[in-house]
Length: 151
Image (cartoon, rainbow, N blue to C red; front, side):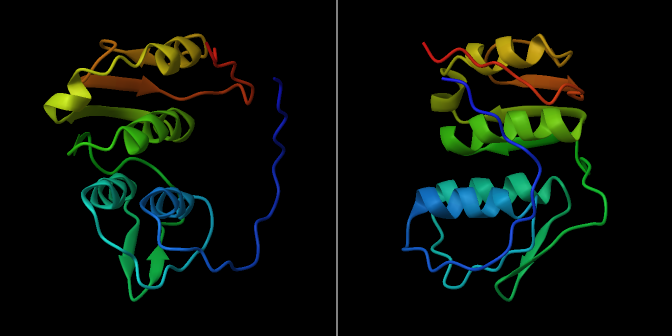
């Protein structure tokens, strides 16, 4: 499958059902556009997502997200409690925004190989210290096209 994604402006609002999966995606979407979330259901995975966006100095208050004018890494270390979804989404976000960060996580996350993401991003100039957590990521993707093997 080949998908072409072009830059666009995202506008509007949606009423999403309570879902940890949706909440994680909406939290990470807050890095790209202004959103608000009402009645955010907190779980360990949602806390991992809130932790992930805080690395970019994004804060959440009164259902609104506040981003700095320029997204960049404001910390060089992050620990994930157990959300593989947040981990796998966070790595490409870091690669696109650029910088250097060490990522660590729970024992269950440390057992998960990250080969598909690493292989795809290594070809675009991103450096990785290993293929499992803890891992240090460094660099910034310049090419807007990235191939990821879907197995």
